[in-house]
Image (cartoon, rainbow, N blue to C red):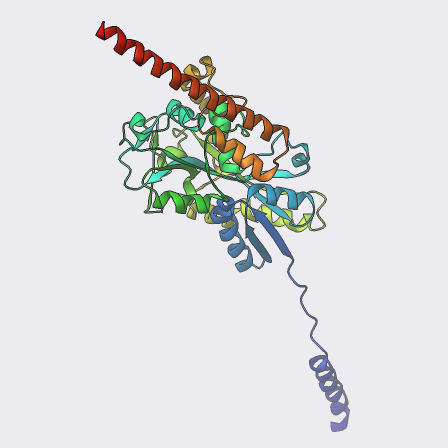
Length: 367
């Protein structure tokens, strides 16, 4: 009878040994998603969300910050899975409609100068004139008699620059009088922090902790967490992640976007000084009101016809130089050259006329 109990016991031990000896089945590898976009959305959203996504076991998000256009085009071409952009799709590039732009956070455009610049406030009308080249000296803004070194982004249709130009001129691809061009806002911010005469635009999330820079008040309104969250600061912008519905990893991308819009993702967004888009329906609803408020303050410029549709007034060589370096034979570049030559000729005529008037005045005084 004792041997009758041994057989089941031996069978059980054999089964346990077989199970223990069997090779373990590997867990499926987490999907790696690729992200590319502008510095603002990389710094403010993608980097933090990638770390949180990995900690929560969602997978890996490879972040490559470069510029807006490269992210959008590579997402359309299937080279990356998500594009980061501080602007919505541009109607002037129909192919951008192939991406679904998901707004994740509210940020704000801020005008930045060197921390020691004595000018602390600027109006929308003054901004309009600076970027069109009518205002070129800080003394015209209540500051020292120093030239305004206007910095901009060379990359076409950069998100932050696009948004500013759309606020000021009604179109994001408006040409401006900015001869100092940088690849992205990160490089621009470094340059502004070194130049006491500098002026440029960036995003609040990029600079609010930067001790080398100061953010100018707009129409007396200081950009800060309070004025942005309640919508009193006028130049608010959403930050977007663009996804391609035809991406083979579209299902994983949607999982990541749901994570970004959920509680863990929103915590990351708030930690960067941003406002989760889903939490601020009032800011979205107030977009038209803010746009009208800005337009009313620019009415004088509009009526004066100072939207130079064929290019900025001052620094006429800036547009030509940029175009010549990229597409020297394009119609736009040739038109910029013609405007530059015409402006130079007009300046020469004005100098000759002033000299003649001065001679006549002196001659008349001696008679």
